[in-house]
Length: 182
Image (cartoon, rainbow, N blue to C red; front, side, top):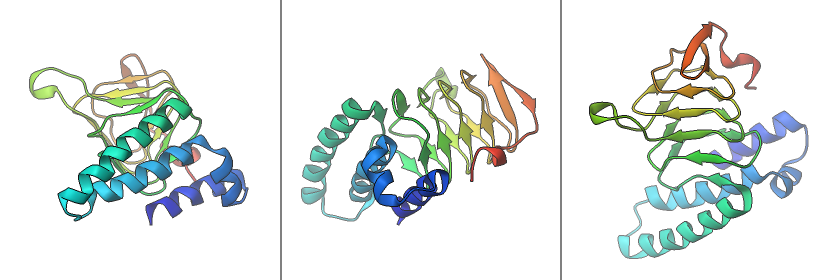
């Protein structure tokens, strides 16, 4: 189950038991709701059952958004081991695709942008670190183990295993995310 791998990431970082993490970490509250309603969304339940449950899901996810400042629509695709470093101001587009074992910090946005053929939503690889207040937007690909620096605006592809920073973000090193992700 993906949520158990999410919890493991939190316990590995903190060294605290899962129950403490579940009671105190707003990121896990948001992930629990997301994982359940995403499971319903991707299930083969008949539409007559699925859509009313997802209607409730929209309301519950909106409640989580108001409580935590974290927007994760049930239709987003997020791999196992997702870690939200700090709550508040996190917006993930409903069509976003995020790989496994990624970290996202407070104030980060993963959203739609661009014009014409370049309009779209990012695809983020595995083991990617997204720093505080970073924006990743448009029909772009973020390679595995990339690092997006704090306060960066990423609107072009990022190669695997590189670090980008700035507005617009540019490559500053070949350092990968190994120091950020357990």
